[in-house]
Image (cartoon, rainbow, N blue to C red; front, top):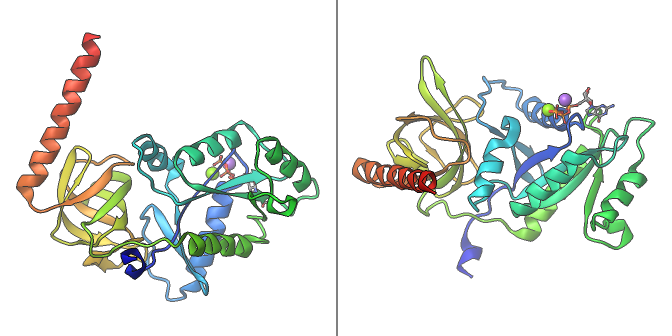
Length: 290
Ligand code: GTP
Ligand code: NA
Ligand code: MG
């Protein structure tokens, strides 16, 4: 019941699928619809994720190349995305990487939505793809099952609104909530070394609120947050659940997929990361001896 009192958070979605089935085109379409909305036109910052706002609600899409974080964090039993949109080109049908994507999404505990893409093509054969899905145990809703299948064209934008509405409907049913006052926790989506700014980490905040000046630990590295910037290029003093931000202040490069956790002070940060490094070294040693 306490949970009910917590504020809702936007659903976090990852897009996966076979090569050339249209993942990037779909992300580009969604990103453009987002940018077009804000005529103000600030400098957009690459934060590893972006928000699409609709009258029905906000959806966060992870746009990290290769979705490293998604894969890494999955192996650690945590989770980045609530939902996985699996893009299947309707002219090509289910291919090996489609099956891989399905397996990844399942292992990650992400709910799957199938987007039958390239519906604008005359060769598109959605019925064939639905049969292929049924062979794998995914029975589309129209055939009495529970698999969600949305026909789209990432190129023309046809059906993309339906896809967004479907995501928001699931989010409403699943009732995603997060506590902005909990101990802050997030996940590193990417990181890089910038000549001017130093180490830049893209982080998705999952719980609590990170603030400038906070100490943070991610895997074996730590830092003190010096600055945060959102996708619109705005400096942020704080970032709550569902925000994706660039974080400055890590001492070393965190890894995509690392869980980022708030710690009270420098001492704790050093202690935790040292412990983790030692544990890893011990593990590596043990492996060598075997
Ligand atoms: P990889 O990242 O290489 O795995 O590919 P991808 O899944 O990101 O596919 P991408 O978006 O690069 O699209 C591959 C090709 O399909 C491009 O030539 C796109 O223009 C085309 N394409 C993508 N979506 C559609 C669509 O809805 N209709 C049509 N006609 N072409 C599309
Ligand atoms: Na491609
Ligand atoms: Mg691509």
